[in-house]
Length: 80
Image 1 (cartoon, rainbow, N blue to C red):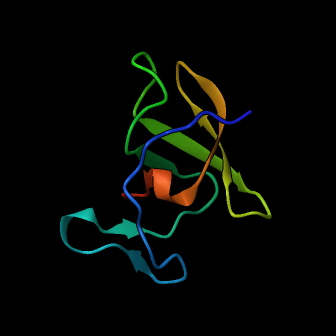
Image 2: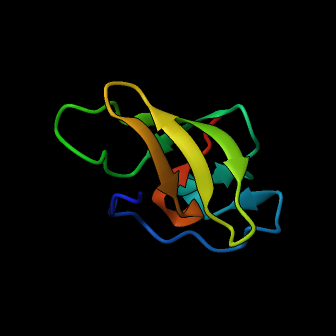
């Protein structure tokens, strides 16, 4: 069950901070809210709660008014 979400590609997952300038993102952790670059549909929120990381690097997440989703790290940005 994966919905394609367009995203800005952010590199350097092993680093303390991803990206540069205004698009800096902290390394994702379970049980944190992240900002989606593009929600999966017009009715879903633009934030998701990360639940756990899969072995392939994707994240199981939950989006309000949408439900569960698997996200690639480049599809979101952890801002806090």
